[in-house]
Length: 372
View 1: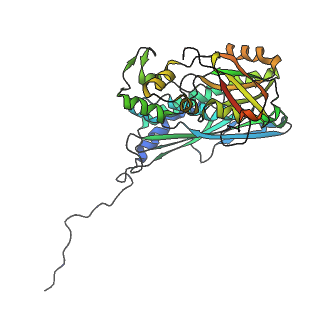
View 2 (view 1 turned 30 degrees about the vertical axis):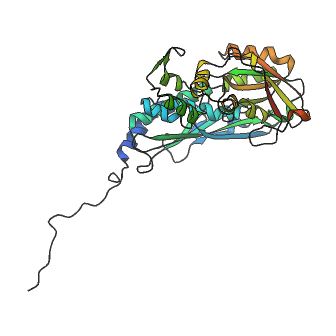
């Protein structure tokens, strides 16, 4: 006599939720984002929220003679680790907007629309909505429409509380109004625009310095008038609208967004090969966060200058007779601005180009910062 064995229960099988992906939470996050995203959109945005592709009506460009599209993509680096440690996620999105928008503004392009991407280990709807709300606020400040995005849950690749953000922006500029090295001339003046703080570069160095010193993010720092974590999360300044407003002077030849690589390397990128930009450090004092990183970590000055913005987040290369108008425009927009140097002919003694990955001009930093 033969017998068969029947299991007492039948396994239900493995679901997507068992693998760590919560589709319901993802849908909830999208619902929470809708209102923030809608505030950035004007009549040029076509279609509803949640389509496969964002649509933008480019008939708004019909009056351009020869429109050039400009695009940039970036993230905010390890600054997200600070936001995660403090469980505060409402500012990191504004950082993202600043990093991508101001990269196209330097060529004179007006930003039109942006998309974002958030990868996370676990979708927490309220956290995702806070991140996107920050992106939307940044887009409103920059005058750019947020027309699409993606939230991806990556369990096993990222921890449950971890996430990263990235974005891309597209803008437009008239071909004959394009800013850049071709316009720069000997005798041009350098106008510095103050940063709001660290912005979104060099956080691997900054985090290491404070970790080695045993400083917790909730530590109150007298020089800041707030906690260390609050200082480190100050959003990247968005220069887009004020920087574009300076173009009305007719004398802005080039701009440089000071990001990874520091002031010297980024300024050299927008210079022709036959000139040298001489920057006078005595014209400003870096904020307290920069001197604290330097002193606490005993960071060499040259390394500090290659890594952090040291108080200057954007520079304009300006014709001398337009300097006053440019500085006034920036100051009226709430951005401290000042003359920090000039452009002269390049000599053999100036050495090779120190442009970030290109064979451009040379930037020389001279003098010593006030109070340093």
